[in-house]
Length: 356
Ligand code: SF4
Ligand code: SF4
Image (spheres, rainbow, N blue to C red):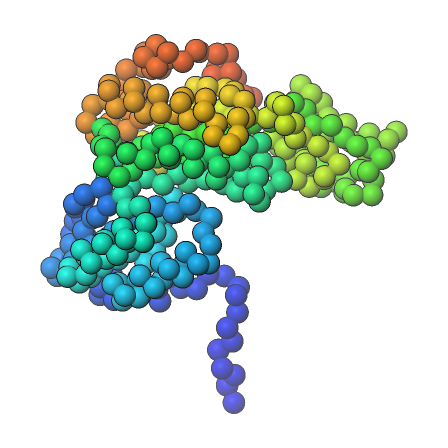
């Protein structure tokens, strides 16, 4: 007798089973999409079918109560279908136009904030922060809340020359899309880790610790039955701390953030770009990080005032030149912005396009 198909949690389930019927029916046959407002867009299929999307902000780390509420709303208006975007917006997918306005009214009455579609600022993609990750050099959720409180008008109503994607990573391991966002905050440790030799031999494995260092700064220290770190090679990434707690990199006084700008993922008009460092260090000032928030808002405003329509942040900077970017924004150019990293791939093609 054949055994019934066993259900496991190994690997993701096939995405097809989660597609709304209208997407399944028109799969690969969508003609165009149109942004109708800051919170709504419509996709039109070759068959004439339409699918409306209403985008809602989320704090990324969601309570089960909020997820249940999202599901209840989707059940009521969207045939039970919704999705979460890579920047952690919730999107309600409506195939019956009559449900669109009642859905929006319901969302508004429950206090959900709609927006983030088109030429503005959408939810900030961010990492775990102090709430969860042990390597964090700054908080993520708290900093993002402080940022979006200031920039909320660009989410809900105010337009920019093009979309501006924001990201926050709470250490240089960058679990967020910091390297390819228009403006991003990267938290930085600023000192070489210290090693507690007496704890090392009981808590850490020598090969793993040596293998964890991307710059080969760690070597054995047989006298102490531990390791030593070459400060000239260390780039303060904290990888060694991740595999070996007695190597400590945290410093509440010196940990802070850097700001990078100009990255993007898509190949529209110009190649994808990596973000580049413009502000090397701002100290942590929880709970509202006023200097970081002011710096980001300032860059957004200068971009809004100077970029041409459709220009992404990186495209605008490349047109006017980095020198002009620094003079327009009034940001001091520091030596940290000069890329002298040994493995810099300036001369290598790093784009995803194969025809220039
Ligand atoms: S970016 Fe760094 S600190 Fe933040 S969640 Fe990822 S590994 Fe942890
Ligand atoms: S912080 Fe990073 S670069 Fe420095 S020793 Fe540890 S793993 Fe190596």
